[in-house]
Image (tube, rainbow, N blue to C red):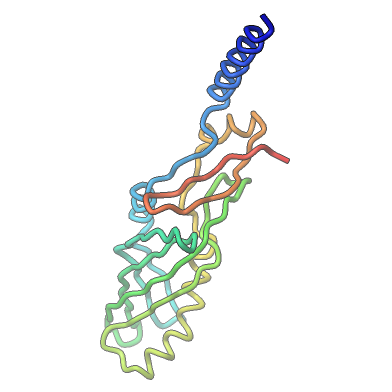
Length: 184
């Protein structure tokens, strides 16, 4: 009889834990690579003055997920317009960045942005080096804190009410997995 009671208790405990898991819902949020790319496509092209002489237009974003370093890589086409001489130059730049969740704004932001490549077509190597020294820090600063994904309150609100908060953000080859962990 004692074995039967233990078995029934185990079954009931399993059922209870299963029911609680369904009440809490998933303990992670998935963000697909497609959704991330779509967000980038919405905010670019982006046009900004650079050094009061140039206008930089950033467009055609191409996102890569880097699970091995837990970063995102982004490459874009750019157009640099010289406002003094009226000339346009095309080019490309690429950067990588980590991710951080900002709880007050419920947003996923880029952090530790590092420009890997900044190339202007048809520019002499000496001038390219000078442009890189001036432009790379400005580009890193421009994309630092960039909101990659803004969550709706209802997406995370229930988890917060049940005592969960955003934990680890895992970069995967097919998107991001954002774990929800109990609040401390």
